Length: 396
View 1: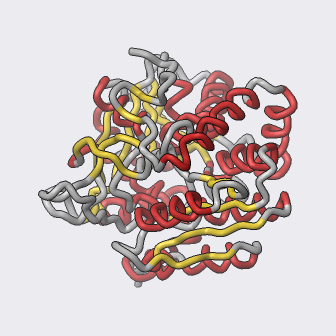
View 2 (view 1 turned 180 degrees about the vertical axis):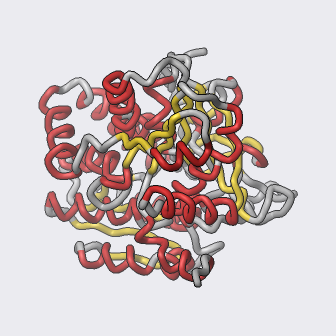
């Protein structure tokens, strides 16, 4: 298996590339050249890590989940606490890197798309930190589900533009952001929130998020947890999973990406792209995509706004087909149950996205044994999802 992907054309095996209007080809080439230069520039990398350390709160802890471990009675479970990052999720790791590139590109206007709102909040936060104009596109349905994050973005000075077309969720917000970018490419930097989009975005976002896996490797060496290792992360577009998995690709760790099965894989109400999708082009790259019988992009469904996307990053498609990572799907109800369990046993309320990864423990843990180690990437905290929890979880 090749680990140094993408290739020069931006492909991970058969997936990736640049499928964009001609207007964007040259800006993407310039961005690729800038990123290639900056990742070798000590001044850039030092500033990136300094901001993550002093502003975003890295490194995040690797927390031993003692009571959750006892509940299953098998391998030891550790939680990578991305929920403790500034703004409440892993998204800020990528946003800091991209906005540093925007500053070096002398772009004063930042645009972004967001689903659950965490990428929008992170973008608005870092844009405020650097004094840049910020516009965030968000589906109207997601704005209803994530009112708290909408208010946070506005308080941080961002303009939040509701998207009323299509499913009014992340897919449509991304489409609108791309239209804006095509129109205003000369003065605007598009901060993409996941490992999707045209090359070099899937590579850049993965690299900026790889700090997650790098920290886990270092933390596991300190803990001396043994050789048998399992890694779990939720997958929508797939950035938190790519960030955890990438530094371990050449290791013996077994890795599991968890998609949203929604109301079930036997229904049309899910967002399990790798389980049910077929290759197609969406938002600038070739990857697995949920499609209807006419080849049109199908509507995705998940109780989690951050997983409610009908595509997935091209590198995940490659990792699936190569067999290096296994991908599974978890339903809305299973995710809700897992969130309640983690809250009760560990005093941690996860984001609904992260709850999908926690839910996969039900399937994985019976296959493990004591002395082995399981790391779950807790990609975000549940503050933003409290309204959904209040509506769906009942307590006496």
